Each structure stands twice: as C-alpha cells, then as structure tokens.
Length: 217
Ligand code: C5P
Image 1 (tube, helix red, strand yellow):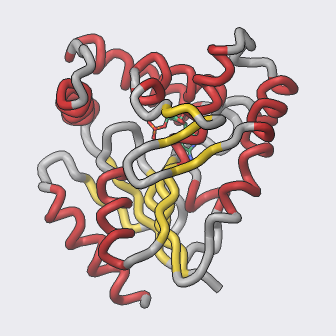
Image 2 (cartoon, helix red, strand yellow; image 1 turned 180 degrees about the vertical axis):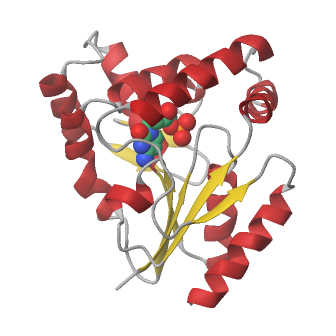
C-alpha cells in the first residue's frame, strides 16, 4: 500500500509549494488536484460549455488527456501551464468544482495516483473525500490578505498582470464558494495537523510537516 500524505487548504495557503517540496524530499509522486479542476474549467470555457452543465462537464473530464511533465502541464498535447494559472482559470475551476458530477468523474483518476512508495496530494478534499484513510493529513491556512499577497507575487514572477485589491476580493469570493458548497467543501479533515502559515516561512512550515511525517513513517 502506498503511503499517502494529504495537504488541504484554501487558495494561496502555500500547500502547492509545500506538497512539491515534500514530495521531492521523499522522492514520491505529487498530485496537484487543483490543476485538474483548472484544466476542466479551462477546457469547458474553450469549448463554450456552461460551467454548471454537469453532464457535459463530466464528459469533458473523462475525455481529458492530461500529462504532468517536469515543469509543464499538457492538455490533449497542448502546453496550458500558464493558461490554467490565471485568476480567470482559478475562478472557472472553483465553479466546475462545485458540480457533483465533476467530482465523481475525477475521483478515480486521483485515487489511481496513490502508487508505491508514496504520494503527496494537495487540494481541498484530499484528506476528507479522496484519501480518507491517508497516513498523514495536513491542513494549511493563512489570512486572506497574506494569501492574496503571495498570489500577487507568483503572478508577477510568471510575467502575468495582477492587482492586489482585486486579488483579495477574488480570493475571498473563491474561499466562500469552496467552503460553502454542498459537495466536498473545504474544511480541515478530522485528525489533521492544522498549520497557520501567515507568519511562517516555507522552511518553517516544511519542518512542522516533516516532523509529523517522520512520526508516522
Ligand atoms: O488549488 P487551486 O487554486 O489550483 O484550485 C483551483 C480550484 O479548484 C479551487 O478554488 C477549488 O474550487 C477547486 N479544487 C477543489 N478540490 C480540490 C482542488 C481544487 O475543489 N481537491
């Protein structure tokens, strides 16, 4: 059985960075589940499918050919790494993610990523729904202002345009939708180590997470 570590939390809490650093240290596979919802939101918008059409979205989700490469994500052979990181794609992702048929369609694909020796999976419902029997569960949080500031820096570094004020508003709106939806809402799973990263560096967060992982290994 693969050892599974789940890292859940709101947008910009640092879970993606922590998950990939942890996976690299352990030499394990990393699942960025948010990318799946971003890919689906992007694919739906490209083909003019409404973001609440469950049947059509599930069809697109099941037909997507996804390749996670070293530093690229390909959708049906096309590099969409930058396109899926925009705020528009994030918002589209959060809309399709609230559709029950979408979550069902993507469930098995995600579970199949748990291969030996281990998997680090980050998202919103990794510890609560996708991997309820995970060996270690982490919930990463941070204030909305700090998360917006981090997102702002990431977008600028990637050469994309950004506005801090609208990022705070968008992040709060996305949080509301993710926390209050009826299927797989964002919440700390039972038994999770909760880490508030507002005033912590990446290395400090990583150390706390690694301490917990070592105890469970
Ligand atoms: O983590 P990221 O910002 O890339 O996720 C984009 C959106 O995908 C989130 O706002 C959330 O609505 C959705 N998501 C989800 N469940 C996951 C991962 C992401 O609903 N496991």
